[in-house]
Length: 607
Image 1 (cartoon, rainbow, N blue to C red):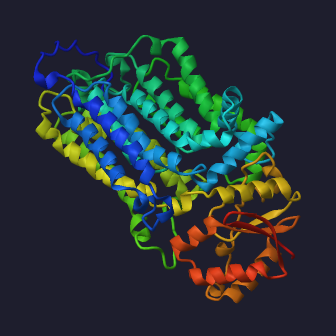
Image 2: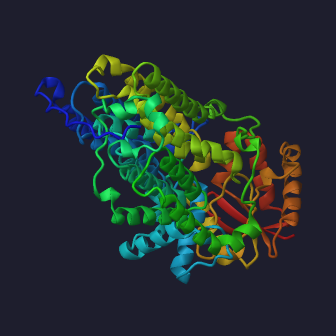
Image 3: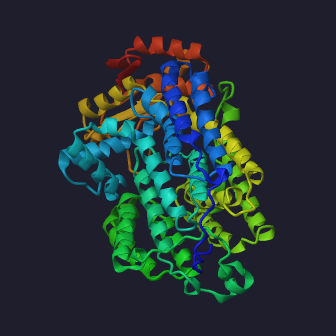
């Protein structure tokens, strides 16, 4: 990265056809956006298959998506000037990728969304948190923000959650644009990095959750630190970098960012610290990743205030001191070992066609981004004389990957590390493919267009293949609400299968299992497969499961669309056996039906 030498002002560009903006871009973005809206009428969520929602999307949806990606990519690789008209194309891309399910589904996507809705409802009812309840109430920044937004606007919390994913995807894209602005002044590279980031972000962290707020704010903090690096050679910490990589001092790149005086001021330092504090109070892991990246940034570069990470540590310690009694008594805060990088296991018996293939889309996308980053970095060093530009970004990308070996999230931490590394990987790729130097002709940028198309193609199954588990039925939500609002304190919920939307009301604390345990379903229990081939055996197995379910109150068994979708997707049992089990359950004296809404039924277990 070369922030250190203030380059001479570039000569004014000549007015040539190649320097004119692409006038077709706004019209094209509007046309494909209209086509996407038109396509939503023909989306058939009921035909979700092993390929997820991809089977239910009409041809017009695919044309809209492909048109936006190709138009966006062509604007980047063409010789025409890049303008902020690309922001409209990016909004359209986010709408297609993350707004489709918000429009089509009746209730918010992802069953685990509802535990965050419940915390907000608790705050609205009680006015304050109770740190003894769960980890969310120890990091309530996001929940206080949403509660305040609800009180100001009157929009129901569940409706806010419905539109959270496209909203936070746009916020992350804006933060990405800001961050890359601390590495380059080129609009082509900044928008190229935004495009690569949005297509590569299959993690789903932008749903209604604390990390959806913490992540863009973390990018804002890093962007502010980059802008606080002074211009000129005093921005370097180590002289050996300057000797080894002459471009650190040469200042030959015309796209080096200009460092404004505000970000070297005390007021800017206060803004940066405030941003870090927002991350600290919102999420347990994100501030640690941000802190590590900030320390490395201050080591490799010399910001005006290199001691800011020390202030970050004080803020983190001050907040953790408040949460420490709950955290230390409930969780293992560190989990060192290679098992943290072992591939996640998905147990399937006889899955729907396409599902096992679609499972490879996400790791393939991550591998593709990684390989493109390494190739771009090598090309920058060996062929293009831009070694200095790719020293800091890959180092910042490597920090969260290294921390995976220490975190308590297990192999889920791999995904979080990828998320925090993705912005810097996207920058390195964009710097290589979308360079603005005179030698970067449209023909030489064409491989960048091919890379964008390849990433976009893999991004579709990575984002939509799991919809049989991600889609939530309104009847299941209603059953979860009934359970928390109508059953005695200490009652236990026993879903038959799959992720179930619970903890969605202010009364969720009275029905929580132990803090470190999830809600285990019947299909997750040992011995299920031995009983799954016969309806009568399965009935006996379920009766025993109710009798052994932990809880101080009665046990409630729930069957609904979530259970049936999970059985279909993973092939856990034959659907005819499941239908027979449902009929036997309805007539068995050990189970009393206490709630029904649509296809969802709740039984109270006599045991």
